[in-house]
Image (cartoon, rainbow, N blue to C red; front, side, top):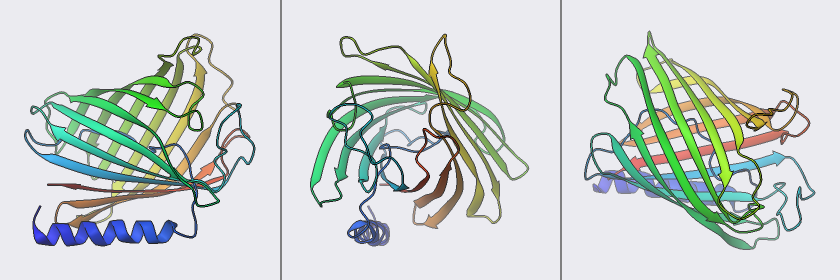
Length: 258
């Protein structure tokens, strides 16, 4: 990593940790709509996911859960370009309780594929498979997997993305396959800045989807900012749309390649 890029990353990560020293809050470990970004073959990257529930559930939804209110989750995601279309990634799930206790909540591996396409305009598609193990405080079942579809389009200053997702447990008696749909629409307001909306929808069991007013559904006002030196920022403030959603959620992701 170049000295300039190292300095920028260090400042951003230090600011992130300082911000959360007195406001330790939490949501799921990753709130992001996947698009077509991939590391070049042989190139490493790092995203640092920060998610905060500013107002949300104070009671566990299952025995042993750590309620999300005032729990901060910091999730480093390391990734490496295998080929022009394949990327390997790994997550470390950590959290900080309202009492100040730091927890390691598990880890995940992912393999992301994006089909060849024009990265400046037109459509793109891909798939992302994740497998991981989580603590009881973070997940009702220990071993879980997710298959994420990646669909998108660019043109006229717009970026549109959709992730249809299937989540299931690899643990015995883990329950049905759960569907969700994440959506993004962003408009370029300058060469380095995009503003838009992100919508995260939990839909319920596949084959028997729940009513639209059930499960968590959260709408985010989002900023995507290129900070230079191959460092980028995704910042969002989310408002829950249903009774099952956390009321207010703050998230930001700092990413770089090296």
